[in-house]
Length: 235
Image (cartoon, rainbow, N blue to C red; front, side, top):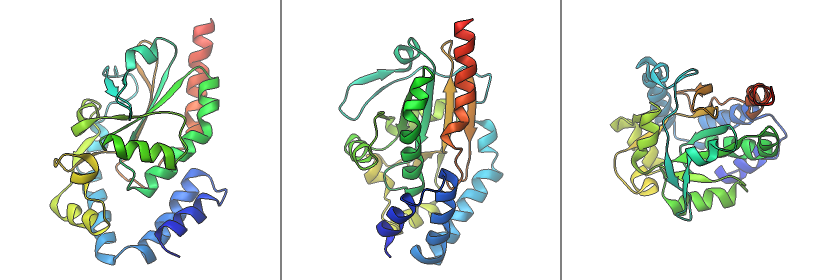
């Protein structure tokens, strides 16, 4: 099986999100990617963890920065307007080229109605260009928007943006993931995979940031947090 066939087979497997990520990682590391590329990607993850970057990301209790970003059709979407109606679930998305990220978006879409039933709205934030985000929304069947964060300015304000070292840029290009083309600028920065729940007063009440792009929380992890916020609003 090729890359797309493997991705689709695992997507249909019925495994939970992390199970799908683990299964794809095995195939990717042993069969789909050149050994030198696998080594480079693992090295970049190890170095990012060692740098302490995930620890510096915004965490529970911090105030989330306000943002206004365009959806793929160019319509502005502001965190202030979304928070006026309820809590906000934000996920940082590396891009359409990343299969691990696409499994994550699909899992969030599968949980979107349950998130909305708990009074919250859901958005993804990505540095990729609008055409790539439109394609991501279409291919992943999303009912929530991917907002454009050109150059990763909002990611930087959440302290989740990082710069790829030269050897990792070579590895990404080998896989066909030239970020300068996908993102429409040549900073070669990405957000770490991150998921936040922001309460209506702007306080972060859930934060999951991981330098390892193969590790993601199940979407259901935010349910208890949203339920607690709903109880507080009803009190």
